[in-house]
Amino acid sequence: MSRVIMLCFLLTGCAYEVIHFPTENSPSYASNNASVSSLPASGYHRVESGETLFSIAFRYGLDYRELAALNHIDAPYIIYPKQKIRLGENKANSSQRVADKATNKASKAVNNRPKVAVKSKVTASTKTYKKDTKPLVKVKAWSWPVDGKVVRGFSNTGVSSKGIDIKGTQGALVKAAADGTVVYAGSGLIGYGNLVIVKHNEVYLSAYAYNERILVKEQQNVRAGDSLAVIGGKGNDRPLLHFEVRRDGQPINPQDILPKR
Image 1: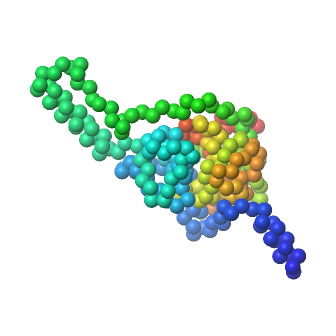
Image 2 (image 1 turned 135 degrees about the vertical axis):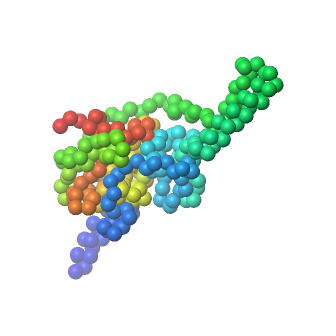
């Protein structure tokens, strides 16, 4: 009996703390299809415990660099629960600015000022942030995150799949598709179950969803082929991995960059 206990201890001791076992009644259980969420009417997102700037950007299909710049958040992009994150310009502010411009033009016309002087001042809320100009570290090579058949392809229309579903084998390990850093490991994005997001460089992120359990921690550096999780699934589709790649925050077809089979 003592040997069995010791064996269990050794096996579980090799795992990381970020391990989740969702149930079918859990909101994080993959009962909904993975999709990009619409921006809220307010234009803001309230940070919940466990979220990172990367997971918020991923949720709304945004570039994390522009999101950081918009909120004046510098690397390593630390955010806090209940923090208000601006996602973009809300419609009310946009309408007010249009009205203000019209008022300014009318006022200047009355004062007979030259047309060349009628220029709206660029405010902080209308600035376009430049993308990072640091030398881009290229992704050396992409590899398949798990062996198996693609049972659902990519679609970038409506709320269709923003990635691909790969049918794997029970107990298979989900591998990093390229070198990078884990920037999210958790179950806070509805429709993704237990999710791992890896940042490969300033342009590319990859995401691994519906995992049975997660084997890595945030801020952990990984190499292509390193184990990230144990394959899980959604509903009766098990074992299955949902895999996504984002370029500048936008979903792209993973099969365009993965090796041909």
